[in-house]
Image 1 (cartoon, one colour):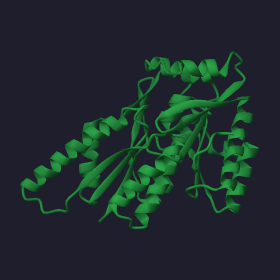
Image 2 (spheres, rainbow, N blue to C red):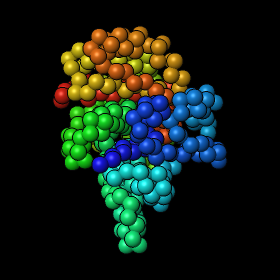
Image 3 (tube, helix red, strand yellow):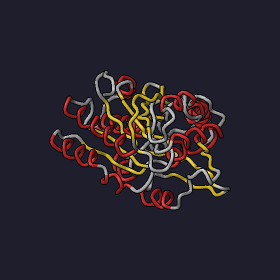
Image 4 (cartoon, rainbow, N blue to C red):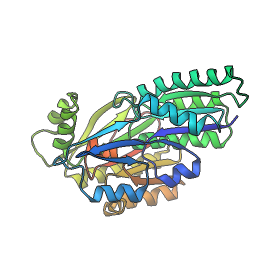
Length: 313
């Protein structure tokens, strides 16, 4: 059975990784001041976008996920003719309409496949599933890397679904926004009011930066640090400690909403890479996707890994 993994563009992985693993992409478009930009995960185009400072609050911006009809067309054109089974993994269903659109598209694909069969189409049978990752950004990247390993190992469809469902509950994803006021304003424009607690958590000082955890469809601030650089280094220190204690997969994904070279400015990132090398863990770094950067702000840093249950410290 030929199996393909499909992710949406909120998933933080570099394009060369996606291409090497044969992972297909559902692009996401964002509109900035009436101009449409497509996120296809190309690092050079992403970095060029961030260099233009188009995500500041001076610009009107919103993201537009593929509709169910567009997903249906993509799957029928690019997936059905070449594979027996397609697994779509989406950003947390609590944070985007992508998952709901994929569920609607799944029904459309199944209907089209039945119609093709009724017309005597003798091509391979096709089935698909939609999986809510329950996480964001780099967390999706960790899940996709794990799942692609299962596909490469020729595991059965049922094993892949079972193991990926269990694995996603062990993913710890984090993001640090440089400016809490930014994400609150973007959320307000979307009509979202769930971030009021974040303002209270951070307190009055603008120098206090939250470390926000995404896990099992919940996003919560779990630490506060004075200064953005200090917060990022603390997150990288956490990654170092978890690597030393042992991970459930040999991947740590790191992304930044800006120039990827800026990660090297953090002493914690350099230590993270050194410790990962000693423990045979791969650090996958990339430019944060456009819709992610839109929601958490330019310069934001995200990290994710998979480990046994624990609390951030």
